[in-house]
Length: 389
Image (cartoon, rainbow, N blue to C red; front, top):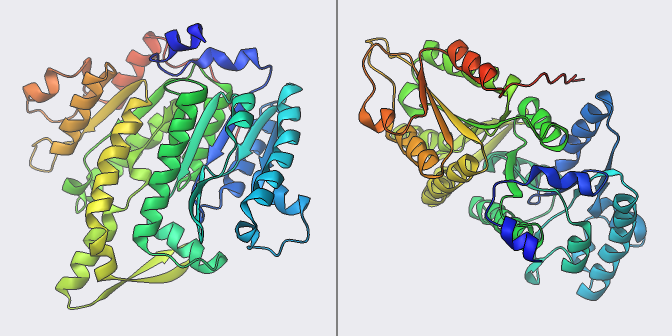
């Protein structure tokens, strides 16, 4: 116990996986995420790179254990039977982990049902699992809303979805700190599997690969397609070489813009294309969660910085030559600096950066290529060979 306390304030202890023989990952996330297809892709990527991973979907296994339960009604069971079912399923998971298998356990941290809010795990079994990684998957609120309408009979509001997401994140983080120590709980978006799937694979099997937060202006350049294209290229290049926690993978601010535009047109609703379907959401409901969306963006982006090794901020040049830097980017740089992360800035403009940039930056580069060259020299870009399906 003394050793664990001494490690408690260190960053993510990547060497812990070797003591188990196999990698153990606990994945949580709110209802409506549809985590299984995403995690199955991770399993396939791992297999293609020579790693067998067993995926345990706890909910599906519980239904299989009790075929008398009507689909969608398992949470209506008495808590005693629900707990007994979960514990029975978890015994098989623990046996596989003890045998040295690489395992991903797909579950929930909490449930909010007719009986109120309650936890969805047993501490003693989680302690025995002793996961190397605790990952909460997240997705855009409108994407969750569309899945809930299409796949579930769960009455909900946008506010409910945002609350459920926060509950999963906080409880998972608390569980991780109680069992494994500080720094083992991560947030990862599944909205962009092209980035998210390799990121989770790399977290599992390439612990030496650097974790990175890409920072860039968003609202200031929405009407500048050429600048947006350069930012997207910057994001893609970093995702190719690093584990990236990209803040733009969750883009809920656009809901507020769309609601504002609809109001100006005299309309009381917005129509969004989500998963190939048109979804109608009232302007009033979006406005009711505006402060929640902003608050979660603020807190989540700081958390993504904290779970990274470094931040790379791309400051493009506007058509008139001025730097496209926002107060949000400056705040991210300051937060990374205060958390003793490496702070790299790519400054494209010919105008000199302000002290708010120079005083927080570890290095300032003129291009993404110059940044990558520096990272190679520092040994930040190992010879990783990962094949994707």
